Image (cartoon, rainbow, N blue to C red; front, side):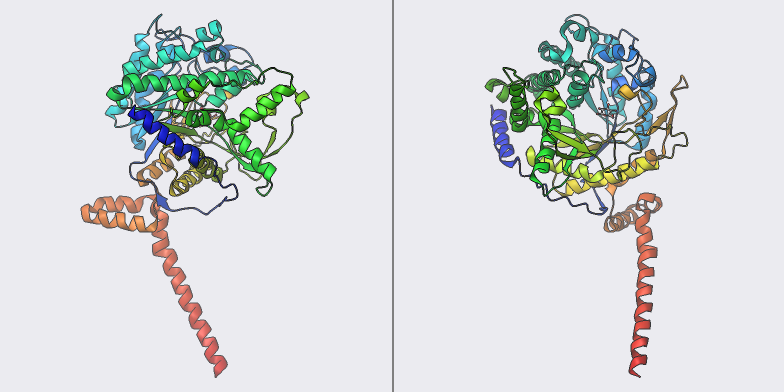
Length: 565
Ligand code: BGC
C-alpha cells in the first residue's frame, strides 16, 4: 500500500517533469577532467548466446538463435554460436580477467533453454544448467564482483516459438514469468540486480519486422508492435511478482535494458526537424520507456500509427492498446533503467505516403542521416558521436523523472581482426563516451554505473564473428578459444582505478593523502599514465609558459624604454 502511494507520487513528479528537454542546448564542450561519484560501479557485459557456446551440452534445449543460425544464409559466412568463446567451460578464466581489471560488476544473461529446455517450468528443470549459473554467481561474489543478471538476451526456447509464435503470443507473458520466478528462487539470494529484457527494440524490430534476427519473421508494420506489447506486459508481470513474492526477502532491484541511438535534428531552428528527432527517440526508447514510466505509449506513436492504419483502411490501429487496468499495472515498474547506447543519427522530416505499405520505419515519417566526418571504425551502423550520449542521458532525465540509470552497454567494434591488439580507436571511443557520461552526471543525470560492451569478442548476431566488440581478442580459429587483451583493457582499467579522469586538484589531494599513508602508493599514482598528463601540466607546461611570459614582458619593456629614450 505504502509502495503504491510512493509510486503514485513518483508518477506525478515524472509526468510533471516530462517534456522539457531543451533541444537548442547542444553544448559540445571540451574534455572535462573530474571523477565519478564515490561508489560508481564499473563493469563489462556479455550475453549467453554470444559467448557461452555449449549449445547442446548438459541437457540444454534449443533456442531460436540455435535454429536461426543453423539456417543457411542467415548469418554472415553461415557462422553459428555453437561453440563461440566456450564461455560455458571457461568462466573461471574469464572471472580472472575481470579480477585483473578490478571490475565492480559483471553483466551476463541466463539462457532460458539451458535451464528450462522446453521453455516450461512444469515440464523439466535442467539442474546442470542451474548449476552452471549458480557456480558463476558464487565465483563472482567470491571475487567481489557484483553479478548483474539479464533474464532475456534474445534466446527464446525454440519450442515456445514453434508452438505459440514466440512474442507474438500473449502466453509468453506467463511463461516468462515462470522462468523469471525460477531464477529468483534459485539465484535471488545472491543476485540483487535483475534486468528482465535486453534491448526489446531489437527483439521486436529485427526479430519480427525486418527478420534479420531470430526468429526471422517479416510481419511488417504489425508483428513488431505486438511483440513489444507482450514484452512490456511480461516485464511488468515479473516486476510485480518480484515485488509481491521476493522483494522483502531478497532486497533486489528489477530493471530493463533499453537501447537507443540519439536523434539530433538536422536543423534545431526548424520545428519540423525537432519534431522528427523527437519522434525518432519516442519510436525507439519511448516505445518501451513511456509505458513503463508513464503507463502508455508515447502520444506521437499512437497518433502516427493510428492515422496511418486508418489511411490503410484498417479498422483499428496496428499499435495495440493498453486497457486502463493494464496502464496502472505497467506504470512505475522499473527500479532502475538500463541504458544501452552506441551511436547517433541526424534526423529530418520525411513523409511516407500511405501507399508505401505498412512498416515500422514508414510509420515514423522521418529520414536518418549521418555526418561523413564522424569516425566509423567498425560496424557500419556505428559512428562515434560522443556528444549524443550526453544528450540522450539528459533526455531520459527530463522525460522520465530522472530515474536511476545503469549504462548497460556502450562500446565499439572492429571489422579487421585486430591481431596486433592495438585498438586505439576503441580507447578513443571509451575516453570520449565516458567523458560525456561524466558531463551528464555533472548535469545531474542519476547514473550509478557503466558497463563496457563487451568483455570478449563474441558472436555478433547476424554478423557472425566478423565484428568484434571485445576488450579481449578471442582467437576463434583455435579450438581452445584463447583470449588476448587488447590495449583498451589497460586503458579501461586505468579509468576504473582513477574513477574517471581526475583533475589536477584531485591528483594533488590524492598525492597528499598517499604521502601521509604510504609513500609507495604515491609512486604508483605518479606512474599512472592516465594522470601522468597532470604531472606534465604542473611540472613542464606551466613553468614553460610562465618563463615565456616573463621573457616576453622583458622584451616588451625594453622596447618601450628604448622608444622613450
Ligand atoms: C546487443 C548486443 C550486441 C550489441 C552490438 C546490443 O544491442 O544487446 O548483444 O552485441 O548491440 O551490436
